[in-house]
Amino acid sequence: MSEALIEIRDLCKIYNPGEVEVRALDHVSLTINRGELVAIIGQSGSGKSTLMNQLGCLDVPTSGDYFLSGQNVAKLSDNELSDIRNREIGFIFQGFNLIPNLTAVENVEVPLIYRGIGKRERRQLAVASLEKVGLGHRLDHKPSQMSGGQQQRVAIARAIAAAPPLILADEPTGNLDSASSKEILQILKQMHASGRTVILITHDNEIAAQAKRIIHIRDGKIDSDTINEGGK
Image (tube, rainbow, N blue to C red; front, side, top):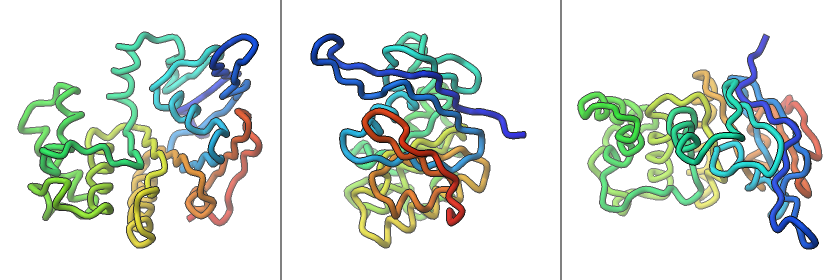
């Protein structure tokens, strides 16, 4: 029987409470089990970015509960949320978010520093992670010396170096050409095959079709939640 990694109960996020309030999330309930590959899809303004911020412990709900690995993170302080993000979640963003003056291996090491991992082990983890995404030959290259696809692979290596249980990918192919997009999606599927829980946030139906489960969000509510038999 599958174990729940994420359990959201009756979650609301309301901006400008009162007469002009905006219900970005409107009583959302959702369970995602360990080892799933899930796409959350919605158009601009649907609430998917707000949901991603909740899943990534980047924001707290107005009401409701969010259990991550059995802990109700909806009630935690900023410092506690920061610790959860560092230990439990690997982030991959559309904009790569690499530090320009650091090499690939140094960029991957950054979150490991915050975890208190020693220099030698940190370097070993970073190199192994870059090798997993096919960049073992680019360790000392800076972002400006790499293509967009290579930069996103560095970002993936950074996200997986500490082996977090959850990979949260927000429009991970949004800035890439079609060939690079296919490479990135293939790597994410390999991460899933190795046992990671991967959540893709996207507005693109073709990207969502790669997942085994597709959750459509509209007007702050879950519109549909279906198993995708064609998911790779």
